[in-house]
Length: 114
Length: 113
Image (cartoon, rainbow over all chains, first blue to last red; front, side, top):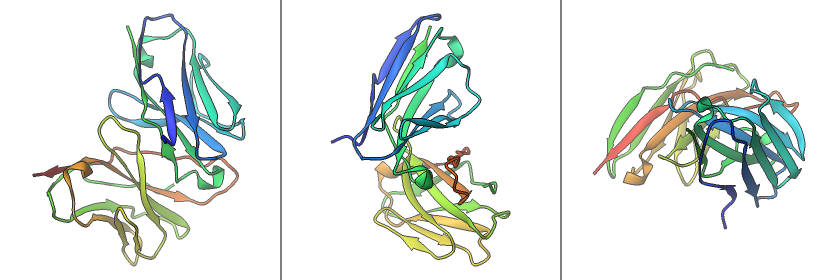
């Protein structure tokens, strides 16, 4: 069983479109995260949710809106996609905020905006 | 959090030990050292962490110097599947729910046959 799963694995879309990426974890963790890894391979945190509540919100354009319907799911919706949004997006989870440094990552979603 | 310095890249022969250094000369007494790795096209993977004492698990060993200014991650018998970027991260246990992983550039380890 996959611990942290993401769908889709690949996403190719045009500028201006709206798209969503889904993440699910079956580890029973309370905290989930979204990261962006750009073309230079820098990996940066975007958001963190604990028990469906937003606890970390980095400087991210408000076109990005995370949604956590329950503590096992954290989805990322992106409005009005831009070329610079092309990246690999990783979802992760941890037991709780106190275990933020022991995270389990998903396989990533490669987003290409044309 | 303390800054870390790692070599950009390293090579290792398959079956030999891979020793990956990390310099964290400004580390404070309550800061932990964490190691992650990212195999190509996969999500990062937690490896090990420590505070003062050396640590070992099924994946690796972590050796922290007595002054805690540097550490070494040891993969005792490197395999081709250990080829990855290895990240050394230090953190302080602040609590409060605002802690976050901050990834640097890491060390690209290539294990050669």
